[in-house]
Length: 432
Image (cartoon, rainbow, N blue to C red; front, side, top):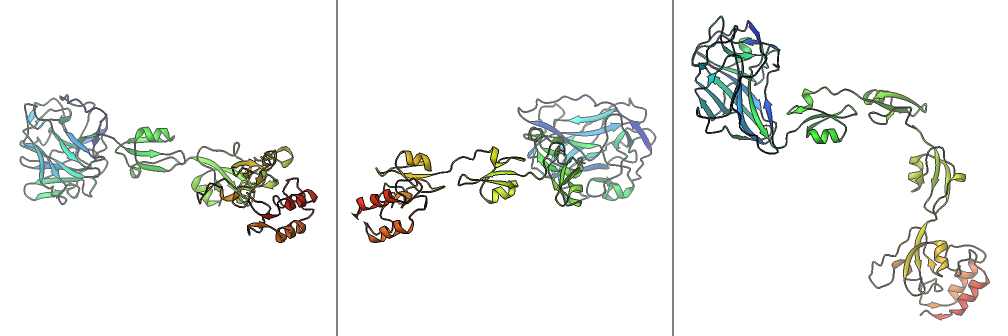
């Protein structure tokens, strides 16, 4: 066989075909190696002889069904009579350049000169639809076999693009003599315009995100919902060129800000604030007031510094003089044995015993009394020995004049004094 690719043409339409109804919820994806688009220039491959074949290795983008195959068929002058050819076969992957076992064979395709011929039926009566299940990433082969030898000067014949032949397991020819050979080694100008149509239930493709990164196998709806730009069904990130988005880049060692891409921000050792941000709207190093868990307030902290103290940052430029930090809450143990989470001041209103900041009314031992209140039902027994006695009196005297935030300040007035001593003496003896 002698491969010829010096005859060029342009095409502008598909040859009319009979199409089946598409399954509800599914989208058809055309899988191809070639780059030929409407109005592009292609090469008519007129070097074939009867009995030879052209084949394309294709990859399924989804777990779906092959429902059609396509072959571009052109002559130089156009308008030649329909040509009855031998067959179009869908094969398993095989070992390149030899296709694997036949999965389906379309006998006697009638080729129409002028564009892409599409075939959706196995039989000439169009009664048996083409339907071959495939998995995502599965490689298969579509081969076209000639019955007629194309005219060396006019064709018609199969067509390739002119962007260069992909030598790695994409294009093969069955030659007489020679058998299956890598078409690119024979000097072919591009990839065969031999394609397959796959019905995908949930088509996916590459998604360019606003930060310039790319995600594979994303649905179009999901891509758009995340502010991305969908690159097309079955398109991968390797086939896409996502534009690098600028964003605010905070420079730690100067405190400044520049609008840079993420990669450039990394070069200057900055902190990138995300795609679409800018220095006019971003505060790089905020400083402000921080409300602490105990209800107090600390000035001049960063959000990170505030978080390290388990506090709540009040915003850049804020100060404690203009901030009202919420009073902390904790378990309030009631004299009736109950428990409720209140602030310390509210606990005093109900004559309860406040257990401290962040405590709660959990009853882990399921004995009917909150764990924080286990000793609070007898708050005067501060050494928890079951009785109010001398050791508890010594605790009162040691805390005299202070605010311990709980017992022995039994009346909760913020000062251990005579009323607390009298309260202890009134409960002298065994705890109830």
